[in-house]
Length: 438
Image (tube, rainbow, N blue to C red):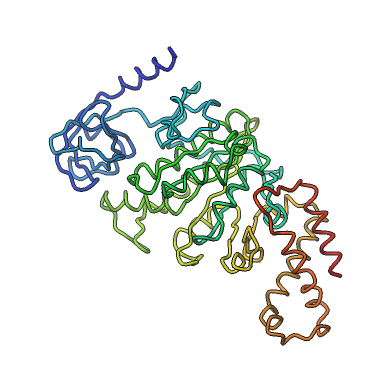
């Protein structure tokens, strides 16, 4: 308790610089102040030292441009502005496990106040140096059969989950949170509907998944700086547990809403819109965020990242999806077409890829997966002819085998939330299905 009080006093004493609100338009605030001592990303309190928060997003002439992080009636022309001079930090600890917090580390689940951890973690920390990171050598069992088989994930790998609306993305995230062989799960829910946050915690995650998880959330009604900061805070919490030597799985839903929040911030700061209205800073911020996940230094843990991307109208080549795909170590594509046929998780095997599959699969496993993929591709090429009865059985042995494989494989890959699979069992089962199709 005494240490918490000392930290609070230090943080309060850091608020030394003041200014005044000169202009106000929506959530955009223009304030005077000691411009040379301020920086983009710094926080300020409006009206009082503990007043509503705003974030500096740019400068216009002699004025600082801020965006409010919360709605408040205390923001008005002439209001005093108290600028923070230290970087934004969180104080995560093991006591945060099982809790739901906001972007500033305050509880959102109605529970007691969160205790401060032993040291501060910067919210906007730079990614680790590429030369100090460990290599990815160990496989992380995810507990989802289709992913463990066809898009294997290493400890510290970063995968993108590309999905349209309503194809089972949240359900898959809940399966990963409960079934993955990780020590800690950190979940960032960015721009979700308020109703869905509680449903995800209670239904998709459940008590078992929540017990080893920290959830950082900013709902869709939160201002853009809060939504952006929620993603950054989730990575800061994950970095704390990584530095403790833990294997961390960071699930961020979604990168698209992070990009949309940064777009709002960029437009408010006066940046020009480019492709589909996204500002240049969006594509500068994406790698800064995503590169924070990955293996740590020798002797520390790793952050395995799974970042969801909402594809507008199932367009997998829209700007954010295209940029994210180029940064990450693999992509998992969820298909509405597959989901409509009743196979969940609705992962499109042929369009999904793990860039580390060759390192994580043994020789026999790699050969088996390669052969099964070939038969899946054969069935996909002939599917329309098969369904209308235009293909005559016996015309092509490879197609005949693909037809026999398809039914057993679809049944095997259909998996419910309460149906985890042991790591060794998935390849044995796939081998049996493949051999039975001969």
